[in-house]
Length: 139
Image (cartoon, rainbow, N blue to C red):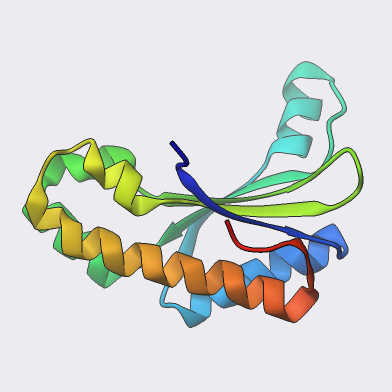
């Protein structure tokens, strides 16, 4: 079972992060957090890893609608989009598939919201791919 919407980009890491952030904003998402895993692991464990960022994305109207239907949904928010370097130097952009995530709630009232967020994340990934060029298409 796949639980992400993913593409691989041949572009500089920072350019991919910027393109992903802009595409998220264009789809109505704000960033609640931006976790730099590389920096965190260096500071906490003194280990060196490739670039890796976790972007905690939230669309306030959709989050509000979901939380109204299912207060426990907050445990699954924000929706994460990750950007990381591969060993080969490519950059992967991957968004959680909200349909898979929300499916664990077994609350059909969330299905329409999950489809909306899924479609928005597909457009985000496609926009980044179109803007920067892909090594492999949207999966």
